[in-house]
Length: 230
Ligand code: 3PG
Image (cartoon, rainbow, N blue to C red; front, side, top):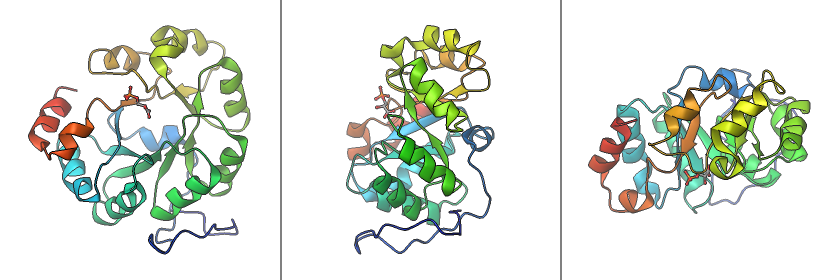
């Protein structure tokens, strides 16, 4: 669902793939994208490409249809591409996207949304030009203002627990009406419902659902057990 027009493309290594996906529906609203999914987004650091499909199947069998694959491991872009091609019913985003080149690579792999740990005006401009939902990371009112003034409707509060957690998000509600939060960083099974109870939280995410140790040993039963509790 990429924009079909004139945005310049940065070459990706041959190891990857030709840009395969073209965006068929135009959206730059993360709120719109997230509104039909369970409001908990697994944040995934995939150790191997082989784990992508069984992990996605385990999570989707528990109702998790929106997944964030972080660009923290070598196989992340290939995993995004594979999931888009083989599990088109899921909504696959790229996380830990820190610059414009990574953003372009994620889009070329087929990512349907982009999550960044910070707010970068170049990335926001690029995402808007390509009609893709971007969730920039924030930790202060100034960063929320910057993101909102650049047209973003959702921000990632990161690291949420250190930033003040639910109290910070509540305090922002009156000032930043219309801005929704996607907290990650210190969100867990024990506190996720407190975040989700806030009207200005659209979803919450974290790695607690998909510990690398369990993925590495293919313990899908254990991940299923954790996911079913949420
Ligand atoms: C993120 O990338 O959003 C966070 O690193 C997730 O934080 P967590 O490991 O505390 O869930």
